[in-house]
Image 1: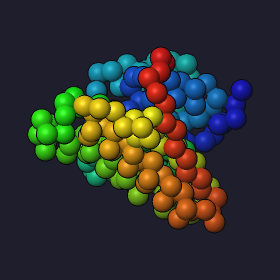
Image 2 (image 1 turned 90 degrees about the horizontal axis):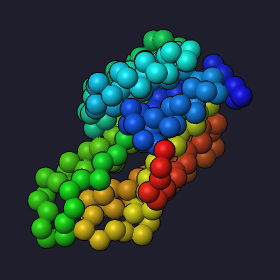
Image 3 (image 1 turned 180 degrees about the horizontal axis):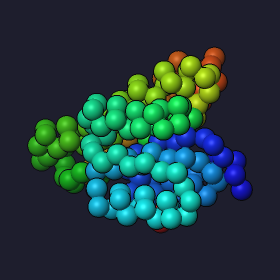
Image 4 (image 1 turned 120 degrees about the horizontal axis):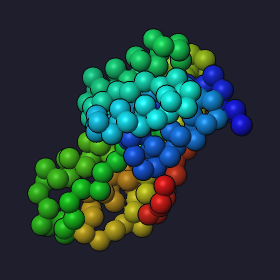
Length: 191
């Protein structure tokens, strides 16, 4: 199957788990990839595995909450292939567990940086390129915790709820264009 032949995808949190499973599937169906992950050694290994299968793949190592990392990842796609067709905002962290009154404020900031700010930054960087071609597909990975709330996981649940809200807002902003924005809210999954 090659339904993504010649399409260019950026996948965040792509070294392991849902992100790597998504990268594998896109790769198997012909997509060119920019994989983004904080874990450089695992990222290199995952990218090498896909390259060995014939995928045209690039790797950006860094924190998705850093604008420079986001800009470099998007630049890799534009420089190599001239466009971005697909964005999978998958990078996310659970963070420390504890009640809201036990957790330090910096834990909320740390989880927010990856789970929400990273999604915001990548959407902000990629959408103008998609609008130039009036085509794009963005999938934000939230969590059932964003819909239901998990006890002792306020930073995670709150940031995943925010990803759902961000997706709805951006989707409405782009509703009259060829760019589609969706969100999935998985529970615990085995990839």
